[in-house]
Length: 354
Image 1 (cartoon, rainbow, N blue to C red):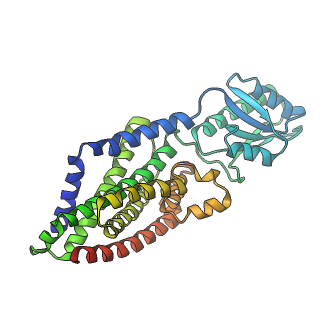
Image 2: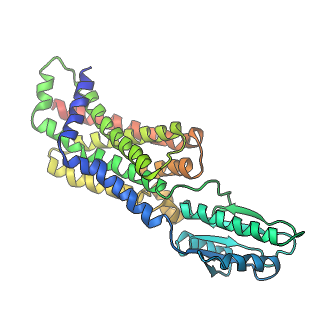
C-alpha cells in the first residue's frame, strides 16, 4: 500500500502544477486537430493516372476527369505513380489498362488516410455509372490496392493516425520530463526520510515506478478519450489498443526512471529529456510517417519503441486488425520495457541508498 501512496502523491504533484494541463490536454489535442486539418483532404482531389488511352478505359478516365471535384495527372508508368503518391504529389493513383475492351481492372494506390477512402468511393461510383451506361457490356470491376499491391482494406478517420502519433509522442515525452521529479525527490532528501521510516528500498522503488506509469497511462487516456469525443476517432480493437498503450507506457516509464537515476540535477535532466523525447519521436515516425522513409531509414527507425508502436497502430487503425496482429510489436515493446526497467531500478536503488 505504501508504494501506491507514493504513486498517488506523484500524480497529485502533476495535477497541482496548472501548466501541466496545457501539456497533458490542450497541446496534444490541438496538434491532433492541426494534423487532421492539414492532411485530412479537402478541395479538388488530385488523381494520378497511368494508362486508359483507348476504348472502355478511355471512356472511364474521361468520366472521372469530368468530375468537378477531381484533377487528373498523367504518369508514364506505375513506378512513377507510386513515387508521386508516396511524396503526396497526388492524393491517390489509378492504374488503368491501356484498352479495356472486355473488362476493366483498376489498380488503386493510396496512402492510409481519409482522402484515399473517399476517392475510392468516388472511383467506384464512376465505375458503376459507366457500367450502367454500357447496356449489355461487361461490368467494371474495381480492385483497390496498397502501394505494395496488397488490398486496401479500410479508410481511416483523418484524425486517427495523427491521434496515434501524438499519443506516442506525448506519453514518452511527458514520461521523460517526469524524471526531474525523481531527481528532486533525492535532492530534497525525501527519499532519505522515507528510508528512515519502516519503508523498504523496494517499496520506494515500486512507488516511483508506479508513479511514472500512472502519469504515462493518464496522458494516453486523456488523448484517447479527448480524440474520441472531439474528433470522432475510433481506436480500433480495444484489446489491441490497450496492449499497445500499456506496453509503450511501460517503455516510457523505464526510460524515465533510468534518466532520473543517471543525473543529479533537474537542470541536467531537463534538456536531455526534451532532446530524447522529440528526437526518438521524429526517428520513430511520430512526426513524419514511416511510410515515406527510405527502406534503410525505416529499418533504423525500429531501434525506437515509437516505430514498433506506430506499426501496431497502423495495423489497428488502418487495416482494422485485432490483438493477434499486433502481438509481435507488443512483444518487442515489452522486451524493451523489461530491459529499461531492470537497468533503471538497479541504478535508482544505488542512487537512493548512496
